[in-house]
Image (cartoon, rainbow, N blue to C red):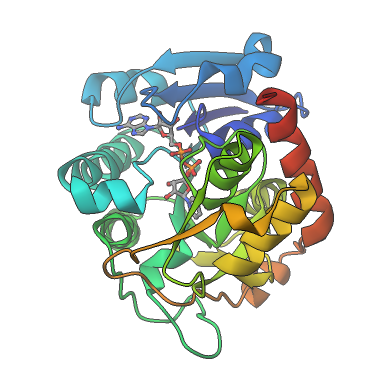
Length: 309
Ligand code: NAD
């Protein structure tokens, strides 16, 4: 079975490629533009098992050529950093929305059996109490999450209008190996290793639900193989923590002092809390396998190995 994985040199995409490459039934083709967030190093252990195409989602010819003989497509490729989207929203619309449009048009043309769009809990916006289900309204707060919500709506519209065989997964915040060190966990680990101060937004009381990346990858595979076409599946880790709690835990695991924490002005439009109800994907047989504590230790050790100071 030939599977096209876009954004496979990025954080979650490369972990997904590692996961699938253990199964010889998959013939993997990665399409990635290699932005600052994509790194061939992330694929070095599996390089001889996959085909790699350097290309942009918005390049119709490159996408068409790569997808032509594929049975399944999983779209991870996107611009993903909220702070960058606040500075420069345009590239988010181009890659995330127009890129998705380009993929959907190719799916219409070819015999693709299943197309999975990787989305995020951020499309639902913030929630004070309770958890979002797949039926909740989309209410994004940042240009990043708005571009992801727009892509999701396009994917659903192609299901209704053209019967494109699509699915969507929306996961909570991922952590684990191979993430470019710009987001909270890898940034703070790599800064703390260098004894640099950790810029914590506001008082660090924003709450995120954290999922270990490999648990998300297994959830994505479950949705891809067993999900019902046209449906959305939430994939949450069930680990709600404030950013301050995460920071304290990282400092403890790294044996570094709390004095490294430096409170900085909060990000505009910063959502207070994300929370997902994942019961729908659990009915397909998925559940997280790693405890939060063991996954954090694996993650910290992975960065310590690579960022020896
Ligand atoms: P990432 O930023 O680590 O990687 C993105 C990858 O996409 C990179 O390899 C980059 O080179 C590639 N890319 C970007 N624009 C491209 C384009 N126009 N054409 C081809 N390739 C392009 O992202 P990630 O954290 O691995 O996220 C992957 C997906 O999962 C994204 O769609 C993101 O919205 C979603 N998501 C991420 C998280 C998270 O916590 N990281 C949570 C929920 C959902």
